[in-house]
Image (cartoon, rainbow, N blue to C red; front, side, top):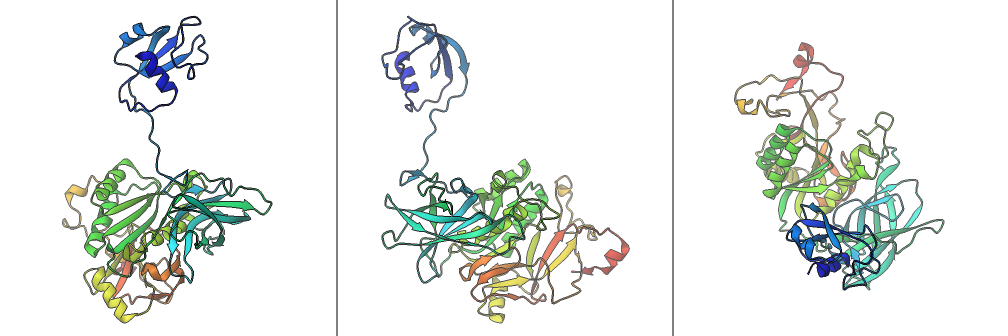
Length: 459
């Protein structure tokens, strides 16, 4: 039956086989054709075919073909992924919009405006002049709607910036399950139907209560991360504080970090969102373009945070936007639940709470007690947060730098790294005697000395 198998393989049929592959070389003209001449209209000298076979002896039973070599792994034909309106569906971020310099991150139903709208979080080249369109997929039918693009103001002068591409939901397609963003330039270039991928439209049903999670932490731009001890301590501290979900936008990390992430993913405590922005855009490692060259601010942190806020808008009652080396800790309460209750009583009708940044420099480490530095941790890479109890005082209480927020995501339209750009109710400063942010980090330009240690305040 070898000729039949060869014909099926060549025609692209999925045999569903899982066995080694064997390569055969055709011996030349006059040695015969296979029954399916549609697949083999011309068999010439040195033509080769790769097929599954039980053993090498089957070559002796094939007319005109001689065994050449074996390939030990055969996975068969790759199965096609989900489709919507005849177009492949891609759920992960970074979908390129045709030949433009625009990239789609995530698409969400916007229920808070006068008219139901699709809001797509995107990264766009700010200088590019294009007209965007939403191609909505409803029950197998496509509907094209003109879209508007609003670039966020916090681009820090980089060529690319975060943006909202929005389009109204038409009466002919009230519940679009998927959307593709396409474009046309002002010169008339671009095709409205040059669609490579559809994206699921999330947040179909708004929630007012009974959220799956009370607290979600959004961690943006994990890039070349290797702090094993710090990651585990952060995850366990989040659990102690009452966090149910941590969303990490991951670009890269070492193998040990990946094992830890896999562990928490299996616990359903961590969601990993692949953040492949570096494959498309030259990102900066900082926020000052003259000091950190690149085309997009700090590994695309702002579009990642924006997407995270919308992704968990109706999954979590509150969302914290912070980094892994930062901990928002209550001073008078035990966890975030008691803290938020206290803050909402003291500061009602606000979209978010801003927590004073307190730096705990890693060059000051005074509490080397056994309970803070277990011997088991000595061979684990990363920074142990427990011995660092000295903080750099805030000399100007009215001016806080690098603060972070916990927000009600349904009251926020546009977040940024430090605070909110657009919201209902704004954000309010939290009294540092109630709660503050602990930031364990290396401080550039400072060295460990008695004067530095003596000037630090102990917590």
